[in-house]
Image (cartoon, rainbow, N blue to C red):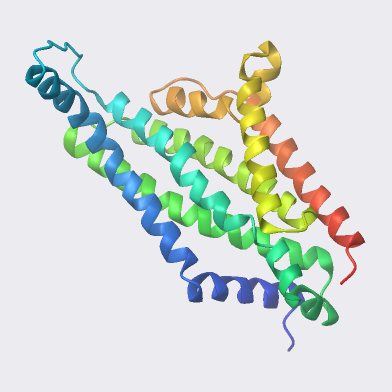
Length: 254
């Protein structure tokens, strides 16, 4: 029995992520920041105190807590680790158009929608797997260095942080589908990233932006209720980004 084209493409994408070592690199980056975040939260105040003492300056800092470790984890994932994931995503479609492999695949009995969906699902799966490893390491090390935070709250906060990550992966995927080069796709992705971050002070509008998920993930991890506004905003951005990628790819002529 023949497999459906989508599953064939999905298997191909997974194999490419493994063979190209992208999955390994992504996993190592996320695990590193998962382990480093509690360490930075624990020992940065002590390092600053010692540096101040050497310079004849008295630095008084509060004792670090589990909340500091969670805050550091959110910052690291939402900035440096996300940067790496966006970098790996920006060539997902446009690179295949440049090499001509996309035209070769589309000659087969595979729709353009299946081609894009298989790629995006693979990116989501790899990103989620790397993030899950990172979160596991971060919670475990936090529990060693500090009183352990609530497991349920931490998991829920991580789910919000993951949604933030996947939202920007999807917008980068959109630009990879519409751009003519990987550089253009990457630049446009980071410009949108900066633009959405700069809109954080627009009152009620900011409640629906992906950036709100960062503070929400911290609050939820520490026991606050789950906000619905950024969930709705990110869901809308994901749907619009993938729909836009499909429309643009339909017009592309090999």
